[in-house]
Length: 366
Image (cartoon, rainbow, N blue to C red; front, side, top):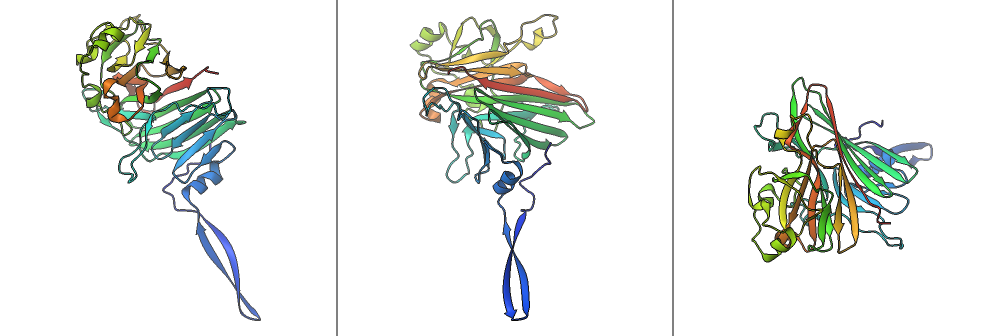
């Protein structure tokens, strides 16, 4: 593996010689120091075909068929994923809903794909203090020709050693986290990898693949990239006649608390406001046999005709939310927030133990 390269290290320099004559027989040599930018240092050390480090503090990944991904390095935040989904030359579509940062940079970018890690070791619930990690460093890169590209980030947060691997392929992308407990004490974590998918229309937004899975209303884990805060996500939507037309009944999201329901629809309509965790109820997990949530499900956007499979690895839960009629508060486009999570029952890491979780987004739109 490549050695750790931190943005906080002193800038390396290039030495350029310049000569000047003070007399016919005396020549002095001086050196001029030209500091390199952090992006140039990263480019020199890790840059290769398909992997480009930019002055804005991001890295751009582009594979052979033109599919691309943009990753902001400081907080491991994926701001853009544009796969090739049509056979025409410009057949790329932005998958992620990202609200850009303000011009004064006081308000960070929101949405995209972000990793949430929350230490709940000393908390009575899974809603402990969120860990807003912002000192990620590039640890390594890898590639297989230019059909597969990978960037590995690394950081430490207290006694935790964390690696975050972002991969891009021609028809998919993946984000994976590896957490190792280097403390002599047990650590408990809540975690999620949350993706904000952009949709062409609110009325044509749906999820397929959750039928038969138990769910309850639940707020998301708090993060610095959230569009809907936990409080906003749980605000009830005013009732309307469309709630009966599309859901067949009043939305359960009006009820706050762990009231469990089984998804009985083939298609979970996302036009209404909801914030749910799909998973096996914690009380049932002590049984020898219980039903776990599906390992994969699919987004359906009737407006664009595109669908994307979301694959869960290592996590116990699926988080799913939509803004409903409140969507205009956050911009002109419609979006949903979803991804693998461990929210209701924390991940327990004994001293020296390692835990892995991942999300894959893939498509066969071509």
